Length: 217
Image (cartoon, rainbow, N blue to C red):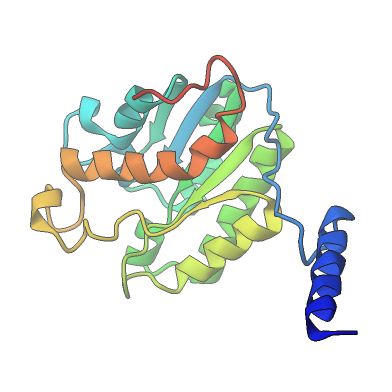
């Protein structure tokens, strides 16, 4: 058999593996992509709450202007993952979620909570939300070397549990005074950029839902 024919046979074989859905070729599916929920719930701490700006400049408000969905801001300034778990039922699960955007970890880091506990709490949130039938997106608030140890852990939770992963939303914001309202928190432009980054990752899983999921221009 000629080299050209060998290559052709190899390509056909690889295509065959993909057609029959072997793990090497499978795309990781997002769990509950056909959710019957109605609301996108932004569940987080001060970054979600919109610390440092007026309520209409928080990232969930920017997001609501970019997409045809009801977007609920369930952010609380200063929240840790342990505190967030206590309000998961009342602030998230009881509000008919279609997609829950989880953004936590900064306050755990500042209060020197063990990364293992933080990661376990995030994993519990993901599992409980998915049991409710909603999709989940995990937001990574690391930027460069800051909180870099959380990034692979959050990615692994997303990969293992079929959740959307939104990496490094604070990149280019935390080091840019023109994007911040103080030493840590974004200003209106910074929150708008965060909303754009989140939208980019979640929109592929919403666009199939017509007509209510058309992305606004």
